[in-house]
Image (cartoon, rainbow, N blue to C red; front, side):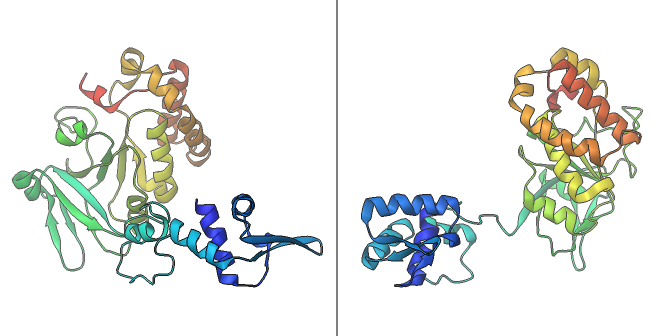
Length: 303
């Protein structure tokens, strides 16, 4: 539908004049040729070495345009959200650009005195977590929100609901940076592009630590994050992940996310050298996932 809509809109703008076939994409030409066979509202002619299209029944073109795009002649206010404008243009909220301007950074605090601030405001995340369980910031790339503590990104709600898995000097030999203080954000499946844009716009936190499922989607998310942040982000490996992968790994999840795995590895193997500490750990994980033909979900950290 989008190809035909774009082609008819171009034809409508040309009014009675001819439009060269070269001005359309292959998909638009295919849709236009099918439309011509069905309606004969557009003439297709040979012109020199090329082909041109010309409207012969403008009322038919207008009727189809109104059917495909009820709001195609309406001048919507700039205040109308993208998805509402898409409904007017395509009868579908995701028909065109449909990203929201703001992203809601839902967070919990680990430890005391975890704070976020910009030039004028301050959020005491530790206090908000103690009082309300969570807090959220509406963020966009142009803002100045930042924190002196690391930001953890976790993929599943269980890891967000309970923070007792976070490494600290009392429970594990691995010490959490910044005296055990951190913000934890839960994302769903794929890291939102708005969040990536926001993180990449400025140095929001000292470090972004990703703890995903160890599968193709998780590694793909790490690749996307690393493309924006480089060495300012890291992938965290849970303690004893190798025996847990052997015992609790899922071959089904591995197969379902294998294409994402291959895409991620093609980037990560080039971007993070294996002779670095992070690269050595990452290479070990990649090799183990391949060898076992299995993936490991985050919740295994409690097993």
